[in-house]
Length: 400
Image 1: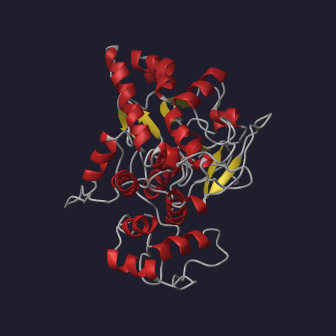
Image 2 (image 1 turned 90 degrees about the vertical axis):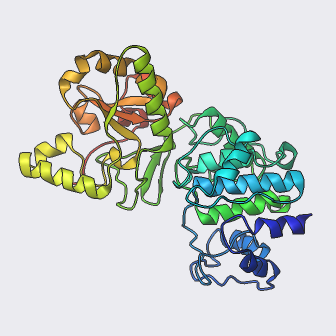
C-alpha cells in the first residue's frame, strides 16, 4: 500500500508521471538540483520526496524551493490524498482550460475537506493550506504524537478558529512544526515548495513525523519575525514607516480573506440602509511609487509624508487595506462613516489611522482607511482603544 501510495502521489504536483516514476526508482543519494544544498534545512525532506516520486523539480537542475504553492495546487493535493486513502486509487482528473482545478474543489467541498472558496490561482498562505491538509486524511491517520496545548503556538492571533484548529492538528501529529525555537507558524506567509515537500512526506509516511512539545507561555510577549523581507508582529503583517515590504511582494489584489470580509461588511451596512464600498484597495509597489512622487511634487516631501506612504511602506500593497466611499474628512460624520467606525471590527477591520494619533501611526486621521486583521484581533484592538502600533508595541518612523 505504501509503495502504491507514493507512486500515485507522483501525479499530484503537476509534474510528468514518467519523470516522477523515474525519481521514485532512483538510487541516488544526492539531489540533481543546483538550488538545494545539503546545508538547507529542507534538504532531507526534498531528497525523500524526490526519490519517492512525491515531487519533482521545476527543471532537471532546479527545484525552486522558494516557489509558491497555489490554493488550486493545495486543494488538488488534498483531494488526491483523500481519495487514495479512502479508495486505494486516484481517479480524479483535472478539467481542461483555466479552471482545471474544479473537480478537486468539488470533491473536497462534498467531503468536508474544503469549507470555503478561495482565489485559486493565488499563493496559498501557511495557515490556510494547513487547515485544508488537516482534513485531507482520516482522523486516525493524523493521530497526535506531540503535546501542543491550545495557545502554545505563538503567532495565531487573528487566525480564524477553524483555521487555527487545522494548524494545531498538524503540529500535534508531527506533520508541521513551524519555524524557530518557539515553533511559530507565520500564518499569513505564503507556503513554499520546500515546505510542501516536507509536509507531503510526513503526511503520507508516519515514520518521518517530528516529535516535539510546546507549552503555553506564562506571559506572552510581542514576537517580531521577518520572513522574506516582510515583518510579522505576533503573526500580524505590519507595514508602516518603520517596517517595509519588498517590491516583489505583490498579491495583485485584496487577499481572499480581506475581500470576503469587505463583502460581508458592505452587506451589513446595506442591511441598515447604508452603502459602503471600496474606492481604493490593492496598490502595487510601482503604483505607490508614482502616487507618492506626484504628491511630493505637489505638496513637498514633508507634507506628503503625512498622508501618503512611500513605496514599500504602504498597507495597500499587502492586499489587506481598503479606502472606502470618500477621501474627505466629512465622511466621518456621515451615517456610513459613523456606522463604519462603530461596526468595522465585527467584520475583522480596524480604523487604521484614528484622529489625534498622527505622532504614533505616522499618518493624519483617515476615517476612510480600514485594515483587515481578522475578527478576533480586530475586536481586541478596537476594545483596547489603541492604535495598531500601540497594541503591538512598535513604532512608525522613517529612518531618514
